[in-house]
Length: 349
Image 1 (cartoon, rainbow, N blue to C red):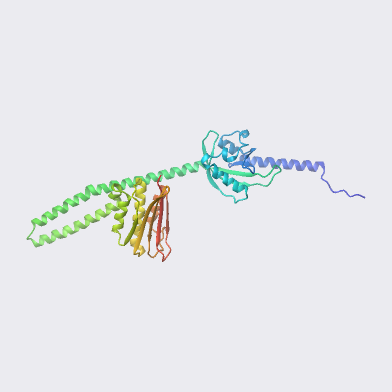
Image 2 (tube, one colour; image 1 turned 180 degrees about the horizontal axis):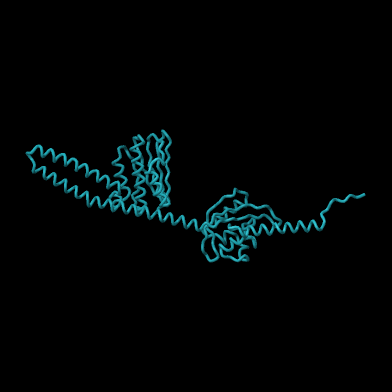
């Protein structure tokens, strides 16, 4: 007697087929209603026919029938970015780790959409390997970030302009009046010769006024040094180094840079050297400023006690904000017992 294996009946097969069809429709509905830009590519990086979702098509301006057939990086990526995108997709296809990247995709009319995207391997299907490119439209976020940067740059520029006006007002107004008063007192002392008591009084007034005038000049230099505007970054940094109560070695560029770049670099050096003098217990500091590629790099190092905390005071935090407004970077390295290094980079564009 032959025993037959239990085989599914036609009704069971039909039910299973219907269930699979519903699951397929569900997955299609999820993909099409997802806000992410979804696109399937093959092992060559070529977009599969009818394998993009509604968000992809609407965002880039294509009809569903227009999206398939081309290598992804040749059609949907700017020429300048194509090679990097090709390498990223090839890495994913080769089994590399999924990495989120920022980039630009090209719309049908030649515009750009900023996206955060990744490429992921999907389970093998009958027609071959398939890979999912998933992007999120971050154009609005990019525009907002640019508006914030522009706003911060305007604030920094306005503050620097206010500093310059205040310095000029001090120099041309109060400082000049004090100089005239000092000259008048010296003339009065000459006329008071022979009156010892009056001479002593005038000497005291002259000394006080001389000290006040010196304080005012120091204040004006701290607000915005004239040398920075008239003679440039190197001259202004040399003045700061000359006033420091320790040896300062300098490596400075001869070139002039834009006003925001020079002002920011100057304040980095001035604040760093002030902190060295106050807290570092150092015998020597080194200031290096040089253009490297499209950035101006500033380094201020000392041989002091180290242990500086960049978050502990308003000066260094203010420098970080100023640099951020110019898309620059700011870092403090300060191991206890090994001195401190302040490093900043400012885009020259």
